[in-house]
Image 1 (cartoon, one colour):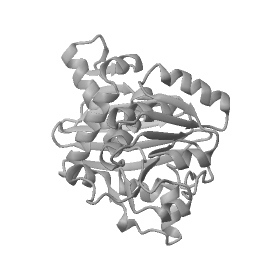
Image 2 (cartoon, rainbow, N blue to C red):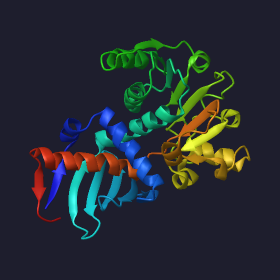
Image 3 (cartoon, one colour):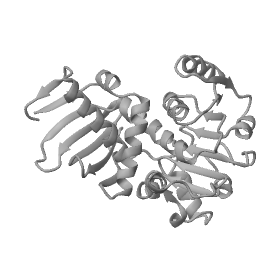
Length: 313
């Protein structure tokens, strides 16, 4: 018997602090060899594109299939022994939550010692999760926001001021935001680099997650050249999806073998002394979907919430 868990129900069963915790535990399991995964693959239809990726967790023996296209976005959990479908979850909220949580984990381990200022480029839907996760993980006191549309930036600030207890300020320019940020998040759909790193602080963590296809670019090769340490959530996915890292490797700016997986940092800690300029490239991976999906599934059963059950598909 499989259960169907709606977006409304997922919001009741997991929040950002819990998501950061379960995603951190997942990276620790990756480091221990308890997970297997398939990177994202894409299949184009006449107008829409189907995106699929999968993961398996040894402890729970759950297989996770994440699939999304257009407005359809699901996580399906299977029993790894019998193949039975255990749950189908609406992932509209969960997919953004886990992306934010991954940045929260990265910030916990990789941010400068006293990260007072979080800079944000791209005040959209994903940015709300980025701010929640990083403010939860680090003692940030102020968030600087820059967007192409000042009205959207101000609306974002108004919304988020009621959700997290930090100060918000609209940044006058990208240059100012880059120069003032201890943690700098780029969350856009840009196809050309927005920043080049010339004005970054001596110690900084840059987080990029929008360039998740080879044709997408958020940060320049020059910014990547200035980094002392580069980390990603999954190297296999980065090699086929991270537009900025692919370009930098093709140009000889960096080498794939010099990029560290986040699970190694979670398991062993960041190198000591801490590298001054660090880049975290987030791709969004099925292991993260499995982590939050599994938690929601377990909570739904434990709390016996009202869900729709189906005998067969």
